[in-house]
Image (cartoon, rainbow, N blue to C red):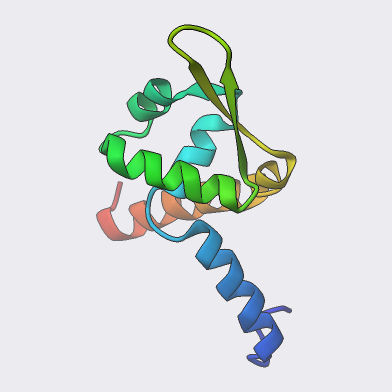
Length: 112
């Protein structure tokens, strides 16, 4: 099992993953993009509670980590669309497990 032994190499890989996905918004943004490319405002509406400033910052960070792409179309005004990359799609199992863990956690803590 990966978690046994506290191997520094394992710690480093977990730290890298946490750095790429840090904060409460990045996984929610990726989840929003999992069903296909979206424009900024569509993401903003789906990810409830996020400000435009924070969304912009998080999208840039996700792009730097090759988890999403940003496509600018030659229209007036310019149309910008964000899409999840295959590297970002590789987080599907992680997001699914977090979903199920979150359901179990909510039930345990809140009894719902």
